[in-house]
Image (cartoon, rainbow over the protein chains, first blue to last red):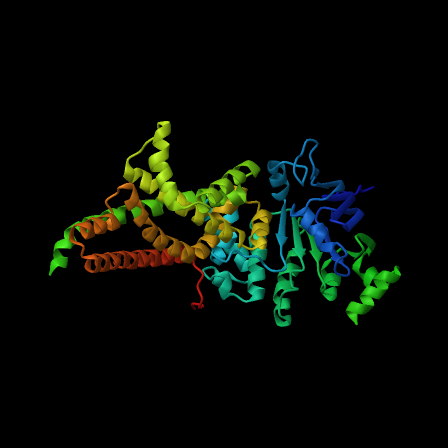
Amino acid sequence: MTQTAPAPIIAFDRVTKRFGALTVLDDFNFTVAPGEKVTLIGPSGSGKSTVLRILMTLEPFQEGTLTLAGMSYQQPNGTGPFKAGERHLRQIRSHVGMVFQSFNLFPHMSVMRNVVEAPVRVLGLSRAEAECRAVDLLALVGLADKKDHFPAQLSGGQQQRVAIARALAMRPRVLLFDEPTSALDPQLVGEVLSVIRSLAHEHDLTMLLVTHEMRFAREVSDRVCFFDKGRICEQGAPDQIFTNPQQPRTREFLASVLG
Amino acid sequence: MEWISYLPSLGRGALVTASITLAAIALGGAAAFVAGIARVEGGRIVATLALCYTELFRGTSLLVQLFWFYYALPLVGISFEPVTTGIVVLALHVGAYGSEIVRGALASVAQQQHEAARALNFGRMQTLLHITLPQALVEMMPAFGNLAIETLKLSSLVSLISIADLTFRAQSIRNLTLDSTTVYTLTLLGYFLMSLVLMGLMRLLERLVRRGAAFPRAAHS
């Protein structure tokens, strides 16, 4: 019995992204299978975060093609920097969620409203239905008792957990984590990682994680990609990358971060 | 006790000043939001039109604007009641300043808020109405408070297009009685009292906006 690999949910094909004279992604190829948990590691400036930001349509790219769930990021007659209409981009965004390094909660809304606002306004859920869903999600991230608090009243770790609940409330197929613990005090990192770890068991959720937490990456991911100079220099199963890296650049990098 | 006899006339003038000021603040506030939002969110053409309006009305004298609308415009066949002219011109003038307040406050909302909104798939209008504008509103209020007081004081210029406001009445009484000291002292007091009330109103409004947008400082348990 042969099993064909499922069609990738994300496919970068020879994507080049430049900021002015600086090439951030260089002829970049990368595919992700549905449900796969992939960690992106590498030195800063190597293009890891840019991959996530392009997927979230926060950044356009110049060359190549990118598809998500079969939808291309560019349209034949598309205009503007994204070479696609806003309606098309919103359709793509409906499948993707993102958790930011700096949480980016809405400071003028309570925790509950942060979580229900998009489901109500964007998905058209009734407020009651959205709140019902939000209560479950807040329980999942361990913050059910904070629903009436405002972001300014929460610790960084709590804010990030709300941000994760907020992203999940939109039921994305792909969830992007852009250095979710880098802005946190060391003692708050654990609570956020344990929430992400619990999501890693969600079979249907595709996760891309940019992180400097190497032990965590090794533990939760199906695949680790080492980035260098706008390309994936080496990738493979976490055990292989962490115990037996093939490329000298990977070895160097791991030696410097693992100490 | 001459001064008591001045009060009824000055009082009627103050009423005109107050009405014109409040109308101009309401109308000017609307103009400020329309032009300020157009500057930030409009396409190139809309943003340029808004910029032209702002610079034209900020860059010329209010007095000359009043004269132009009152004396020059009728020559091409368009004329309004003096009070209408006064309110509209004053509103356009302070609206131009207000649009800069709106634009500045919207621009000061962190880029990350826009990104978070986009990641949650909010549309542009939704992002403006529910995410950025409520945050910007809180930033705008102190500046709008100043502008409201400024509007009250600028309104005295409408006396020069024959509107019987507080300043106009003061001039008339002084011309009859030559009692400059008493008349102008009372007039100053009148403006000051009105601006006190206006400051109180703006404070109240600011508190309402802050409550709506709720940025609590202390944690409640």
